[in-house]
Amino acid sequence: MTVKKDGSKWLVDVYPNGREGKRVRKRFPTKLEAQRFEKYVLNKAFEDKDWNTGKKDSCRLSELIATWYQVHGQHLNYSKRRLNLLNYACEAMGDPVTQKLTPETFLKYREQRINSGISAKAVNNLLGYLNAVFNELHRNKIISYENPIQKVRPIKIKERELSYLDKEQIVEMLDILSSVCVNPHVTLIAKICLSTGCRWGEAQSLHARHIKNQRITFTDTKSGKNRTVPH
Image (cartoon, rainbow, N blue to C red):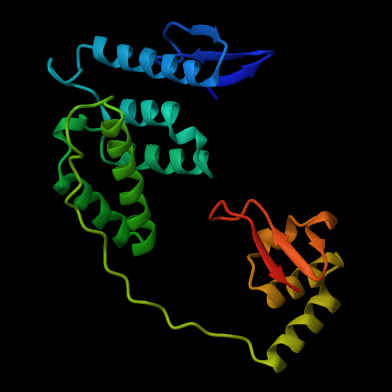
């Protein structure tokens, strides 16, 4: 994180021009002041580059993704995974100059991914991630031009038919887990998932403090919100 608590003050520790560039460190009495200074430093670095809009713009997508991650992306859930997906797509598209990026460029890449077996949902997620990069930087006035792929529509996905285990299948599954799995917690986790509809990872991360008064409270869920389910 580029803004963090340092004793009684808030420290800004940022490389506005990347790890190879100059490091900027400064302390402030409040977090708000530190965040404002961080944004100022990053904006100033962006404006001083010879590819900044208003001058001859040669900023590449990889640079834009790095700026987005520094000012916003790193604070999101699963931030590293999202960054890796963005960088992979950026490299596959040839790391284009951002203002020369066109819907056609992305559509060609999307078609390649679909033909390679990647699901429509996965490429829709990527489109959302790329839109978020441009929209967030534009909203914060780090870039002045509009999102170049904002008119690309996600692929329409047919709703999948849901299926459920019947009572006999549940009994069979639990019997198999009990006989095959050495770890006794596996069967318990499976029962919690069946009883509450939670995800496996949510059940696996439970502690004793989360189970109280016939209720289970799930924290750090995919939506970022706590959820309590009657037991």
